[in-house]
Image (tube, rainbow, N blue to C red; front, side, top):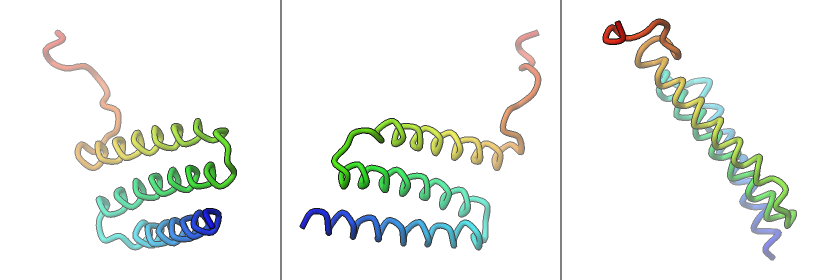
Length: 97
């Protein structure tokens, strides 16, 4: 019974990722694309968690942490790029001199 529910959850998460891929490709604005990319990362994280439950193992917990960290860093970098035009600013501040 529980395996059937976990398979159903995997199918629903997969459909959600497909919907986000559509928004990633066709999004009218860059903010829509960044949001869909972040949502894909969260859905991948959930998919790995469901797979851990399905296989009854804790072997993939590090992968879940890695996906979460990379998703956060990627979203932050894209948001900074939209706001300022660069991800990493070159040079120092004026009050350092």
